[in-house]
Length: 258
Image (tube, rainbow, N blue to C red; front, top):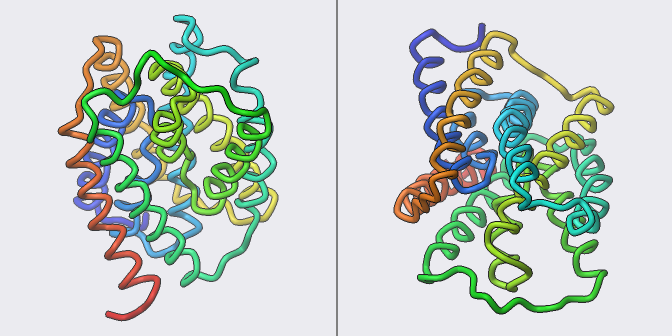
C-alpha cells in the first residue's frame, strides 16, 4: 500500500466530491483527479492510469442515461469519436519523460480551468441558434482532443464541451451528452494504449478505494444533473483549485524551479 490510511481517506473524499461535481455537468473529472493525485503519488504512470479508470467509472452511467433519454445519437457523435479513438490510443502509448509529462499535465490543467471558467461567464452558454460546420471539423477537432486525452490521462470532455458551446455546435444538453460519451471512449482507448505500451501501473488497494469513491459520487452527481441544477459557482471554485494545482505541478514538478 503506497498511501497511509489517513491520506487514502482524504484522497477518497476528494475524489467523491470531484465525481459529484463533474458528473452533475456531464464530465468525468479527469483533470481534477490528476491534480489531486500529483499531491499524493509520485509515479506519473500510476497517476495517469487511476485517472483514466475513474473517468470510465463516472461517465459510464452518465452516457447510458443520456442515450436512454434521447439526448445522444451515434450518427451525430461518430465523426468526433472516429477522429479521437486512434489518437487517444496513440497519445497513451507515448512513454514520456517524467518532467515532460508534468509540463504537459500542468499546462493541460491550467487550460482546463480557464475553459471551465469561460463556460460560466455568459448567462446563457447556448442560444437556440446553431451553426453549420464542414464535416472535417468534427474529425479534426475530435482527433486533437483525443490525442491530448491519451497523452495526459484526461477524458477530454472538459476541453470539448466549452469549445463546442462557444462555436454553437448544437444544444447544450446534446453537447453535454457528447462530452460524456467522448470521455468514455477516449478513456477506454487511452487505457488500451497504456496496456499495449506496458505502462499500466495500478496500486490495487488505492485504486479500488478510489473507484468506489467516484462511483458513489457519480451517482449523486447524476441525480443532481437530472434535476437540471447548473452549479456555475461550484464550477468556478473547482476551476480555481485546478488552476492553482496546475501552476504548482508546472513549476515544481515540470520546470523544477522550486
